[in-house]
Length: 240
Image (cartoon, rainbow, N blue to C red):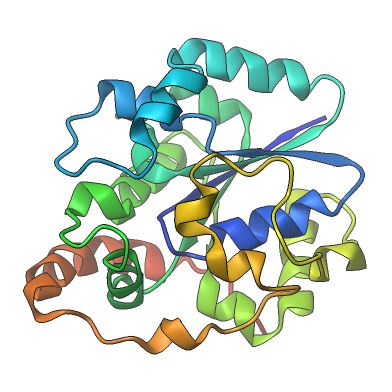
């Protein structure tokens, strides 16, 4: 059995991808299991929605989260949906034992969407810098991750998911292309703040909000984020 570790930024279709993998009988999905640890230990400028509840209900020790994930993977494949910035260490060696997938999106789209919930996000909030650093860490250690892009996925979800499954050495399942409206049992308690679009969907689809303009006050953040996006861009799995 294996751990498929999705390393993403917020507003990247990561939740839809978790829902996709949740439709498989051979995989257990986990929704951001390091979130509590991150909120407990990171220097955060903006309070997160449901932050107190997350801290009260989630495991806060990183080593215990890792132990629980590895125990689960002894019985069944595990898909971990996680945010890149939840990894506070520069060298999280435990992910070297996992199958890592980095999900990215052009930061202009990411920031515009994210700012609808947290109005003044920072570079640390959006995860692209950390995703770039984790890519280089994994590559340096001979575990170069698969890099996927949300826009590439939306061109043709079936083709793209087939390619991803082939690289992960798991069979593709057509069940991954559809889910029922509403949440899933594995949703984090923050779902009510972030998952509205996914809860109203039944498949991968371009959202009307995906073309919303970038607020002018966030243009400097975009300038900060672009070099890290460029580091990853050349490694994106294309959807032919």
